[in-house]
Image 1 (tube, helix red, strand yellow):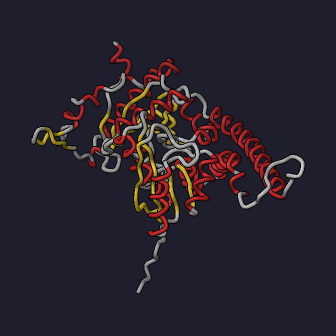
Image 2 (image 1 turned 60 degrees about the horizontal axis):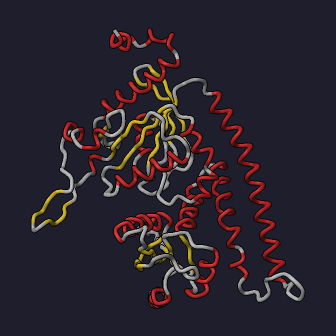
Length: 405
């Protein structure tokens, strides 16, 4: 008889605050996402704690009463980890660790941990390690709280200062080394990109876990790792794809997320270069997710930050097979928030069908539903760019010349 391996998940609680800039509804969205991140990292969420505050407490992030409530729950339920939805300052993390006496991490730390688990190639591991050290450097002091004398000056030069300064020096040296290593790899990747010639480049972009890798596998006949977890893909995969004898390069990029740590944006600069240098973006959206509109905004914001928001873009609403309508009560009437669409034509008649200069496409990457129209749409967009770049190749596409006449 086979023995089933028992997986020991870390028991965790989540903590977030409601402020003037973050409503209760928005906080619950973030905590839902934080719970998914925790599960991806190998944790089990036992409870959520929320508090309404004007701004976070500079010492403990939450108020004294709420902290006592968290502390009591942690002790009674043998909780391993307390996860905060917003990035904690080094002082807050230090104070909370001392008071709660369990592991205290924030959203940034959690995402970095997932990235560390997911990094497969040497390049991805180097990027993640750099981001981790940059996050760690200002937090080193809190690791030496058991030492009484940490300040410099006459009569205050204790072992604590020596240990901290030594560690800081090691971390700074490591950061410098990793940056130099990434510079070398970045140059190599830039050369690789330039060696691809003048072929049209298409990049898949979108929120994490929207099905970009599944779509890449379906259209590019590649074997990109796919899993229903956040950040399943970290390494950029580039494949040559041919539709109707027209070749182009298709890149699958790392998924975006709200409150993306600045350290990751910095260290994954080269990965994002695939997006910056693309001629066409395929913005993939998980239409089955209740907050997909918010995801679109987040992705558009990141594209703006990396100066790629002006590129030709096709909106691809994926997972139409998994879509279910939402309902809400209105004076005892059950009203659909959005209609249940059974046909592609009905999808096209919604506001989503009119997004962007090119009308959006509605597909299911797993079921390959509406795939022919999707391939045709991509083909037409790539062909337009290709003919602009290689006008002497028009004879390859007779239908283009017919349309022109």
